[in-house]
Length: 492
Image 1 (cartoon, rainbow, N blue to C red):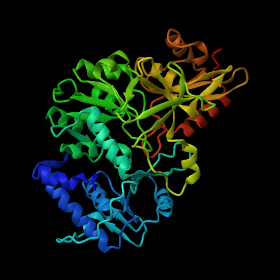
Image 2 (cartoon, rainbow, N blue to C red; image 1 turned 90 degrees about the horizontal axis):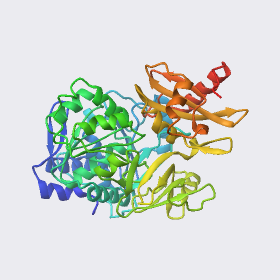
Image 3 (tube, rainbow, N blue to C red; image 1 turned 45 degrees about the vertical axis):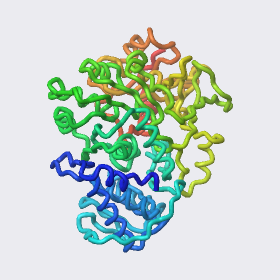
Image 4 (cartoon, rainbow, N blue to C red; image 1 turned 135 degrees about the horizontal axis):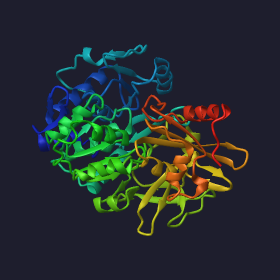
């Protein structure tokens, strides 16, 4: 299969290191990784796994995730990594949806399933014999659940053509090659675990450093040792790394670029990295599309710090207004994406799949702007937009400024009911400072029209999170409404 690159790389690169366990330094070559994928395929075949069957994995980041990915690819089976941060009840709910043929578990987890096996107790066959599935680029290979931040999580089906397109586009547009290496600290139950850098780098013949979970001191040690040339993280990670005592003395000379995604990154954080000579970029992607959709050069990233750049080669973008009419340069519209790196849809959920499609385009639910040069900036989520006094307010636009206030590590804005204006903004600041509404509005005065200024404010030392680490906006809304009912000061 053209997207089963591991066998080819085992032939091309042989004894080159493919994987390194960051904790103990254990390494694995491309040839060894390919042999293990075949042995896992044989083991699964002996369990009765074949084309179209579902193989569930519940474990933290470990090499077996990648071995099983290629094993399932060769069998034509569907690999489903579960979120290990969920509760047992949530795992059971997802298992009912998946209809798993077998379940493979890390030592710290337990699931009640008739075909559940612990990874550490599996004895793989020494000889390999399995029925390889016929080539079908449209066959789903991986199912990842959405975060559930706006409802019940949906199983996103990622097929071979999508994964292959993302690999090729990422390699070409980000200029990855066999000299590159990165840490995989994003969990494999997220698209960031497999698809932002891991699979593209492995296809390029690069090296992946497996990290059980993100730890700033461990990442800085790897950077200082020159083991990381490209790095992906969310804004909080870059902030934690920059605040770490070892950051100032860390040798970052081997970093070609870093890319931040998942939320807007504070300019102050980006600037700290750039002052160290690091090319800092912002990106955009989602489980259903890409996830790597844009490319941007360092000069543009410095000049337009909020921008994500231009569509990757082979990707088409469209901005639509509320009436599904195209939006021109400078306007705000829902970002819709077409190209070979779109998912196959949601498993057993035809209605949600249909509502997400607009012809050949996929509705991202994100609002964006495009300038006259074709460069895109993400404004916020369509569902998060609110109307104040008849004017549309995009929380993401407000957040981009709030996160640049002194000592503010993160910010979120939601719309809440208001008798006078219909809706107004309620801001949450992650900070140790005691800001009030007047101070926030004074800071925003030079940057935003007054109708966009939040009228309510709460400062928090921690944010409510979902199991996947994203902010729980439902919990924020409940807090906002309770705060208003309790009589928080209204700033007119």
